Amino acid sequence: MPFRATLYTALLALVLVSLLQAQTFNVPVSEWGPEDEIGAANRLTPQKLDTGFPTAVNDDYNRDAQPRGGETIGENLISYVDDIYNGWLGIGTQLDSLAHLGFNGTFYNRREARDFVEVTGVTKMGTEKIPPIVTRGVLLDMAKQKGKTQLVEGEIISGDDIEAAQQAQGVKIEEGDVIILHTGWLPMLYTNATRFGTGWPGIDVGAAEYLASLKVVAVGADTMGVEVVPPPNPTRLFESHQVLLTGNGIYILETIDTRELVEDGVKEFLFVLGQPLITGTVQAIINPVAIR
Ligand SMILES: *[C@@H]1O[C@H](CO)[C@@H](O)[C@H](O)[C@H]1NC(C)=O
Ligand SMILES: *[C@@H]1O[C@H](CO)[C@@H](O)[C@H](O)[C@H]1NC(C)=O
Image (cartoon, rainbow, N blue to C red; front, side, top):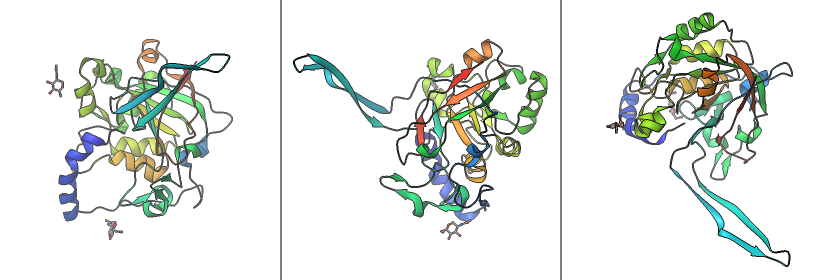
């Protein structure tokens, strides 16, 4: 999730307001027990299958190819190039783990940040704990549902919209699915990257609760944050993230490239995603694949 610019600008106002009206979000104990760290990934069964996509990334990372130009050593004149990477893992097409966002210091399954967040990484719910996500993927064309090719920043996708899109497109969300929402926002990355990353269309809290009630494994979209920005209430930030990650253990997939699937009229597919095994990370740059 692109927390930086968006979050920081709104944070001061939020803190001031939250002092006045703190609201309680009841973080439940996981339905898979107090030891559970993988949430909705428990719904992955051998019967489920699926796909995804990659996309361009922000510029807030540095990468070095070492040694530059390639060094040649040894009698066999081996030439090699390695990588050093120094940057955010929450960029480009990415996954949010259950350790990414919480409520007032409490995360998924009532874990307290002070108990699992270390300078060396998280000791619970890290990305490396998430099993391969291979399941049925459902693509809902939410732009088409609203009679458009591209939704705009601040435009809300409600639970009713998602329900109507299923009916109109003849597809039904089932337990254990990965849901990908197409808003048509991704092309903005190439026409105005600043605008692409400043706000976007997306789900509201009601839609997050609706998707959670359907017991999905992950929710993704072709935007940087999946949920609508700016939010309907400017003092309540990334609240759908709290509903999905913290309240229900459901993963979030951001900046998913839905263009080809939509062009091809794909509604269901096999979603396939293996996680990078970097211990203690809360996000991951991913490259999911859709197979149909
Ligand atoms: C937030 O956490 C602080 C520190 O644990 C606690 O004092 C406060 O009551 C909490 N607020 C809410 C609304 O839960
Ligand atoms: C790009 O978007 C930003 C933010 O919406 C806007 O201020 C700027 O004028 C846009 N640039 C162009 C070239 O349209």
